[in-house]
Image 1: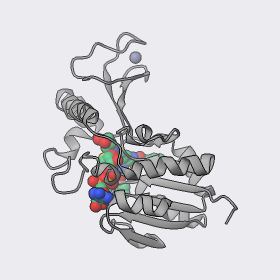
Image 2: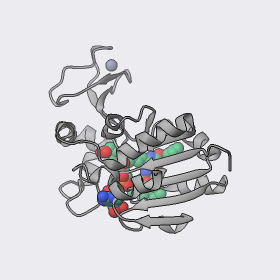
Image 3: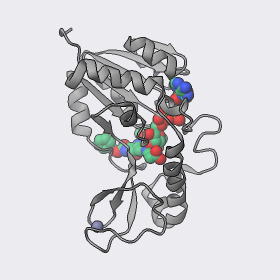
Image 4: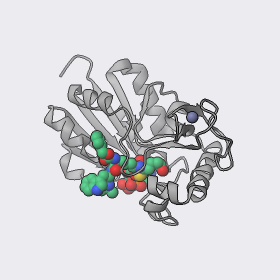
Amino acid sequence: MAAVPRVVVLTGAGISAESGVPTFRDADGLWEGHRVEDVATPEGFLADPETVHRFYDERRAALAGVVPNPAHVALADLERVLGDDLTLVTQNIDDLHERAGSTRVVHMHGELLSALCIRCGGRVRWEGPMLGAPPCGSCGKGDLRPDVVWFGEIPYRMDDIFEALAACDLFVSVGTSGAVYPAAGFVQQARAFGARTLELNLVPSEGSHFFHEARHGRAGELVPAWVA
Ligand code: BJW
Ligand code: ZN
């Protein structure tokens, strides 16, 4: 291994659970009151934009009432130690990594605090509700949508992610069920390129057996203990 190890950390909804942000697939998760096809596909948005906007507007509003937990803070501390040798990839659309102090977060599934114009592809920071918003300020015509990656869409910054996976010495997955691709396949890609792999999750994920090592428990305890 290099003197300073190159590390890729992938986070999922489980890292924000102890901050009070609901996960998707756990009991009381976000999918419980919704059909995935209705709120997390481009087809669902075209069919009923109001329902989709409400779903994301509620989640955006809830961000104001949550704070980062020790797992987010530990990963921000790790960035201060490793600098560019850490690539933090999150599937989460909340901003808790940034609020904990991480500065180079790869949001592969987009961000709640960003709006995307469906006509010109322009982006703008967005804090309030999107339902009832005027059209895009750049082209003046397009409707805005949440800047998130739905099923059937291509996640953001895949080239940067694959490059980091190919170059890393250690791949760590935190708080993700391993149910959604391509993120669920990162462990096998990192392994194929020779990295050691570690899972930190409440319970064994769907891909737990792909990791060299798995530790099960709460992210708020496991992540600070691993970083220390
Ligand atoms: C704790 C904890 C605590 C709780 N401490 N842990 C058939 C086979 C293979 C693939 C496909 C297929 N059919 C279709 C596909 C592709 C599809 C897919 O994967 N479908 C699956 C359902 C099979 N994927 C796509 O469409 C993706 N695009 C794509 O593949 O494009 C093609 C392409 C890719 C790459 C290169 C070139 C081309 C897009 C997927 C987009 C996913 N979008 C969502 C919504 C985003 C916006 C939003 O937030 O609303 O992303 S879906 C949702 O799931 C969200 C999440 O980021 C994602 C993953 O969920 P996550 O984070 O794992 O949460 P949970 O709830 O599932 O798990 C939480 C875990 O935490 C649990 O294990 C708990 O135990 C644990 N936990 N408390 C530690 N305190
Ligand atoms: Zn526009």
